[in-house]
Length: 396
Image (cartoon, rainbow, N blue to C red; front, side, top):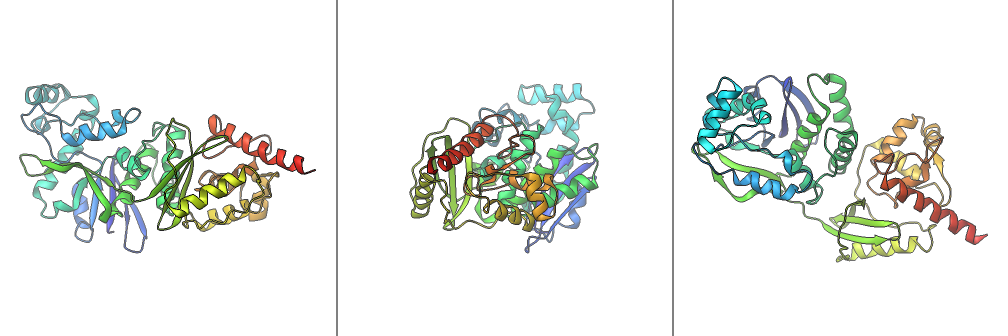
């Protein structure tokens, strides 16, 4: 494995790794020292644990302060104060909190205490390891923020909406996301590995694959008394972006390497951002034309994403005429699969509106849209279907 993401879990540490050919591997180790068996072949290991600790110092790490600022307002609380190295020697929470207060002027949170053993494992291992430069600290929520082009996730990761939101984002960047998640859920019980542990390790591995485009907080990291860097790494995405106002909401468009990469309905307040490149201008023009003629056949070069099966579903969506709908069951029969599998492919569609997943409904109602089964995005779906139906009626 060359690019590895590691997250702490109840069973120890869960990891996801990729090689140069994007073949993947997952596993669980009980102690961090077990990564010694594959550290030599790796290029980068990103781990969700504090690396670099203050001693007798009241200042918080700058990387944590800057990470909270970027994750405001909803996800900033996910970055908690890091304990002092002095407190790692404690035998119980009360003693650790007392030592931490003496060293930093702050008592220790229970959240910090719960992972104290893992912090000590990593700290001890790094101080004995020659190749410690290959192991760097990441924070999953900051990684998601960066992959989402510096916009924090909207929902808590432990909720169904939060899990779906993060899984969908990872699918944009890693075709194997669904397979990795399903395999991890199959192999390991939730008492050992939580669902969000899987995504946290995976986002670390995906971020590590962008090794040549990594940035750090702060830009010039501090070092602790043991010369370990106090930094958090993330991907510095190089994309072109536009945010345009449609009659039924704001639409975020992103391109890279002269191909459309992402289409997303924005629910939060956001300023419009005009298209600057010719590709984005062409995409915007076609989308605007849709509102006068929803029968338009989009002609847009898109980044190839998703599994082979997902692409079969997305191709089937493009065959549904404007003004008509199909049920998940209808498409399942055509594709010889299950309605649930069709629904999952629709949920992970990277190009809503352009690839018209809004034309797929449930047998008993509207169904979901863009990862939601209720709420604002369902209203967007209703408006799209109404617009297309009204256009058909106006032609009669």
